[in-house]
Length: 571
Image (cartoon, rainbow, N blue to C red; front, side):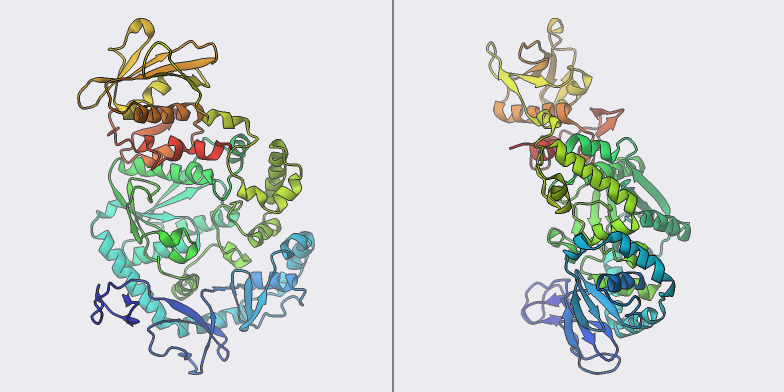
């Protein structure tokens, strides 16, 4: 723990000097030792601050964070800079974003370079000179790096182990899960949790998005072979095709990453429901505060309904305060196998075509995943033409597609628009347009609003009533309706309630789901009772499981009542 006011380290929750609340995060910076040619991680309260613990000379500030540059990426860097291949093979090379440090000297790789350089020429040179590349000097610097930062590593390990043991003590061992992505952060999280709990049999869940790097799939196989005692589950959406969904609702963009829910969170929810039904579980995630602005706002232990994507779990992050350089320090010291994509220069290994990927990551994929990259670019250009972009190639190559918002230009955009007319003969009744015939799927969507009764309605009108769950008083009347303006329609009347508008708004959310559902699986993840599921392409709410919490019909938890509203809404 650390007191920001007094700038001291303490084991107490409140500072013994000023009595202010202490924090777990002790700020650290990266320094450079020009003699040892390695980065030194030092925090604000370190006693020998500014001095190399190996050679004792004065060190200088380098950056807020850092990652190692492996020989494979170093060779690529030499080619991009127009240097002699393997010129820096004896150098200590590190990086922070687009800035590289070669023996401590800074070089910035401009992002525009990735758009003008000949990819085929780069690939030829890599293949020509990679045989002369080696890890001899790289390994030497890494051993020195570990030695210099032993104290930092021991503090990190001790704190993480203590955190894990404390938070896991409230759960049965069988209700503890490791979220495993195949990236370095989840790899380290798995390792520290297994060691802290002295339990190699913990459940691992890997969300196969179908957009994984080939290197990730190779690593998953190696990891499973090395952890034979672990229970390893793969969560995968086998019912949807990524390209087909992109054609329908558009490719995911930075502000509209529907792919996460459909291909990751949703399938993982199904695995959790299958394993634990409605039991609350503890999931250890490899989330780190320094990764992004959005993640810096997370709590280290999170169970808030607005923050947790899967309501059935409490999320805990043992490495929440670790930096990138800390992750690599742990990996090197513990001699942990890791995803080979990092050796090539990728700093993140999620979905290879993610709109959040940098230009450098896209460039790397052109080199190491050329067929997939070409297919994706061709699709994006075709999509740009479909929605009427006058300069589709420029729209794609400049990354403007990543900033896309809403469903402008898409036929499917009309599905999220609620169209209705007020009934002229009955108060509080609306006639809603449907995109398909009235059926049991639509009737079932009223389950969160009350008890659906097929017996009490007027059978001659095919009327179905929804009763208040506490009083059994009818509050909603539903019946299929013939409307000249609409091919398919339903009449919904509210009754015996104080706020008709509020109830009709919830009804509209369910009408939108019925019309626009693309099986994104967001609703399945949102339902903490496990009552919502997509079965054979149909939206189903189990009335025996539904607890009528109304989270699925509240904009606070589900914008517009349906995630498709966010992705397809037009201006």
